[in-house]
Length: 128
Image (spheres, rainbow, N blue to C red):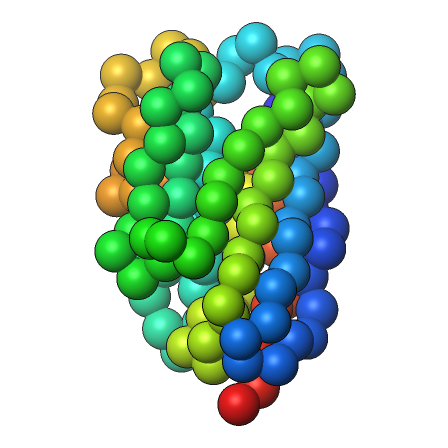
């Protein structure tokens, strides 16, 4: 079973920055072709935030383009989400997620909302 464990959430002021990390269990990382983040605010719907494919191609939601950057450290099996210029509307639970290699789906912010694998989530709260 693939395990995804997030860290790095917390509180920030508007305009501030946070970096989320997600450690992917080493044994199974080869089974994943797409990694990314989705978020869900209390009472809200899931929103795909960013994805990175095994090719390195990235995709971002319009709401975070230019502010967030997704990256991966393949050697250490860690996924990152650098979040800059945070806004109160970024407040949500953020989940690390991935698609199985066997799943024939495009790696992008739409598909990452319904992943094969996901972590427990980490809370991000941005105050104005």
